[in-house]
Structure formats: structure tokens, C-alpha cells
Length: 130
Image 1 (cartoon, one colour):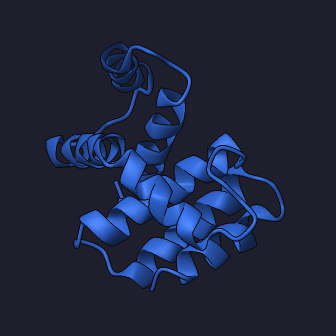
Image 2: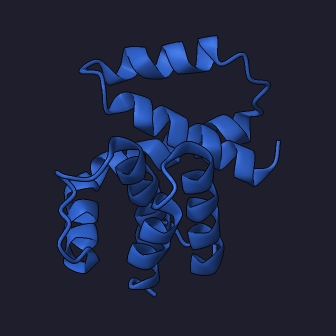
Image 3: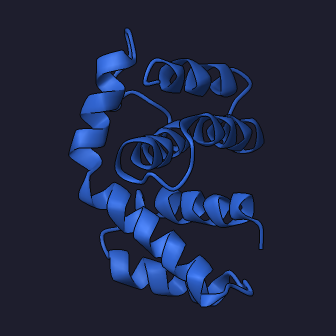
């Protein structure tokens, strides 16, 4: 599986966790029902990334709020917020992927899963962090 696809799965799980109180059960269901052929490394990447976002969510939201003029994470669409949180986590807490690649991947997720204006919104916010 390509890294882009693994990142998409991390985004999907992160988005789903925004709607549940039982994270462990949601993670188990995600991996069981997704019927994905994930390698051990791919599953570890997804869990490491999602757990990292959840662990640093307050700090990540502060970073987003500091550059999102006239916007607050509490007012953002859940899908856009999940994309931004994932990208900010990768940019600030995980040095595996260059920032430019992270931003491009986030914009692609926004094109695929969010509204028409979301790619520009995501690009604008993340661009202020480099």
C-alpha cells in the first residue's frame, strides 16, 4: 500500500474517532471492518499517527488557531479539522515526511473528502506553518 493510502486510512480513523467516546473499540472496529490488507508497519504507522494526534490535540489546535485568521478549531468542519490535525501533527511532531509533502497530501485529502473551498483553506493554514 502506498504511503498516501496509509495516510488516508489514518485520516479516516482520526475523523471517526471524533464521533465516539470509546476510542479503543472504534480502532478495533476500524481495522476489522475496513477489510484492508495492511502490513504490520502500515498498521503501526496509522496507530502511531492517530495516537500522536490525540495525545497532542490541544497543542495542535493552538497551532492551528494561531494561524487561522477569523477561524477557530471549534467552528471548523470536522473533516477539515481532522485533515489539519493530521498534517500539523506530521509537520511538528513527526519528522518522517517533508512539510511540502505533508501539505500536498492534506490538500489532496481536502479535495477528496471536503467542500470546494477546503483545499485552499487547508493549504492557506498549513502554508503559514512553514
